[in-house]
Length: 556
Image (cartoon, rainbow, N blue to C red; front, side):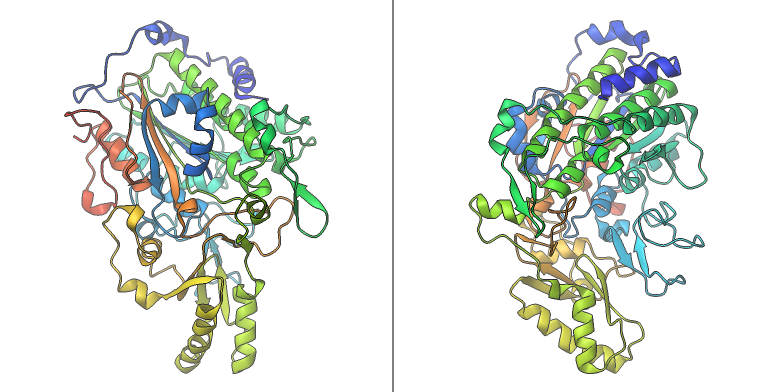
């Protein structure tokens, strides 16, 4: 089911015109050129395409004919940056609409450890409330929450200025819906096997409930493989992964009835999010009132395809082709309303292809991480050697946490053993302690010239980060053994994971391209200026990007 089919079904079910025909005549009128004096748009649409790296944008840019092509005709920053080092989903989404690095948002990783937590599970999921009884950080066992986001989002600031402003956030993942939607969203939801869901105990609106039912019906239907476009044929090469004879690279994104995981890894999932956003906009009449409204859309399928099959196979080519079409359909529906809307698109992080294909495609040095670097494995070896209590080390990603059960002397002995071991490992670029990070100021320079310390410091929060952080060398994939559904990933300090496109489009806005480096934290002040919303520059890390080519400026 594509966005077009789902949106049509929703329109019939909800008895609303999915195209907002009341404004149809205005849509045909030519738009006057946007200037500094142009009134604010009535609707902001912010789209995050999970794992849509600058490399993917560059690779497919010449092939786009739909929604991506439209965005590429606007104001294009092809060298945008998720500037920080913890290039994971939750930290990245926390920067997009807060104007702040993870050091300020408090979202230092998808997971971090709180060794003082009262529950047995000391791992904390970035978008959970661990104080809820009977929960853990495991998938499906946590209570989704925005409590760990320490700063306001654009939507929060808009509602502070005018409570009539509507903020709706819909995503393929809970963490992206929550981190971009913020603390005060009117509606906030994400995809689930049942269609759509929200915070525990929160009922969906009638529109979202009906959208969820339509999505659940689509999940319950089997899907044959997609036809491979001619320009994807060169990527249709089987790549062996793992030790059980599995391959990736030649998939067609087919799925069995009820297979939610494969549904997520397809353009159909993104189409479901976009169709739900279109239906909610119509039902709530967003963009039709006296204020500017904010519609947030988190498109996660590219990430699921990237993790499951890598970034350079036929699967990603099908995903890019399908998403380009789905975005085109979505924008066409918005166009038909005649609403003056502005779009900002970026990604939460980049991504890297699986090492097995890299080695076949001219990069023989690509490799998988040594299992000995796992915190549990390393901690066990050191604890046994020194006679220290176990578990000695906890960790998820690059942050390593020492047990709170250690005495000061034991802690010193453990660090004296662990740090040299890590620094001598051939796959480790650097090991940085919290004391070193606290002594390092957050960089104010352009993100393309940041040092490794600059990157790690922008992700460091003293209440949540580890006792030390390791950075692997370039093109070391932090998955020791690939499995079906998880062969490639992101999360490094290197530019293939940091670089993302940042695109702005509005009807009548003259397009231009600026290849110099900007950051995702610049999006909030840019959009705030566009709608005349004051922002305290001392409370964010980003700056306003001037979207008007020529002597005038949109940074007012």
